[in-house]
Amino acid sequence: MERLAAFVQEHIAEDTSRLILNRAKWPEIDMDLAVNCIESRRKLRGKVQEWADNPSLVFPRKLSAEQCSSSATGRYKAELAGRIFHTDDQSDGNVTTTQARNMRLADLTGGLGVDSWYFSQTAEKVLYCEMLPELCRAAEHNFRVLDADNIEVRNHAVTSEGECGPEKILKDFHPDIVYMDPARRGEGGRKVFLIEDCTPDVLTLKEEILRFSRHILLKLSPMADISMVCDRLGGCCREVHVVAAGGECKELLVWMDREWNEEYSVHAVELHKNGSRAIFSFRPSEERIAGQSGNDWKGAKGICADGIGKWAAIERIADSKAYLFEPGKALMKAGAYYLIAERFGVHKLGRSTHYYIYSAEGSCGDGLTGEPVTIKELKEFGKVFRIISCSGLDKRSLKAAGKAYPHSEVTARNISMDTDTLRKKAGVTSGDDAHIFGLKSDSEGALLFITTPEA
Image (cartoon, rainbow, N blue to C red; front, side, top):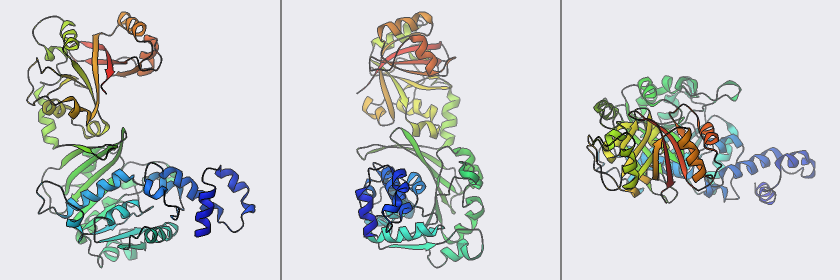
């Protein structure tokens, strides 16, 4: 392993295809493994930097490095597991590493081992279970290097019965929590999204696993439909966590509790580079009620309903320090479209247009129940843009916008043209003059916003 590690470090920046072609120069090196290690380390840079920086770690499959959790999401899952373990005695949802040390967690889809490693920093004992022998061998080596001596490695493919069934694997381990991250690849490597198409099939295994563990923490594709997932998994679904980082929705986490029989809650989680996080929590019934109110999608007329004219209301908004709020990926995936307006004290532009108007001088409309938040608080959950001007979207306004701001970013949502078409019609190229939005308001139709990002 030392010779392999030295070779990888020496050739880390080289073209791996050339290394394979010239493998005869290094007969003592397992070149396929070396190339996988090199390419995996590249994938892990900025993702799991602790592993990328450790020259002694071995990575036999590049795909595993592509699919593994990041440091940020790994830490979040470990903290969530600690909170789940303390379900009965939690007060504010904050659980320290020390408090959860007597937790036992079984990771039935070990993979590269990143999640197991993070769980090991919270739990007393972790069971890493993986079907591929080469990953198990690498995991045993890597965990030793990382001094993670509380992880037990087993080479098993989890199935619904037989020697690899949940009873055989879990009965003697007595887990408090079972974690699963089913492989989302079908035949020929195609991506799959339905639970039953993933490997292992959680729908088949769920009831048997819950015999040996009260809790299951399930990681699913961020593309999965939340309501469909919870319907399929049944009433034991207690919480769904939509985790976003770096402007992308990374994971969908489902906490199943065999003793739970109430409505599940959804938690939109934005993880920030500085280590902070913003969490918006709600129940689907709250969102349905907010959507039925009809008070948060009146567009400009809901902003200043004083009869001053079709565009004058929005022009006044531009004059009174108004902002456009674009929710982040976690909020959008979670589906908290109407509760955003209700809780943040902002105005939704349209029923199908998920952009919001925020006035720094307070609301001049009606129908809002929440207190307006600060710009800083809004930026925790998405992007905020200062509105320079707003008008109806037509040839005249597009020409004027392009002339005044020729180097601008452009976004089109819920109007008759896409972003590229809007950019061409405005005649602008990418730049930082402004950010031009073409958005639909239910009351005024297509609107053209000229904005600047709020630093």
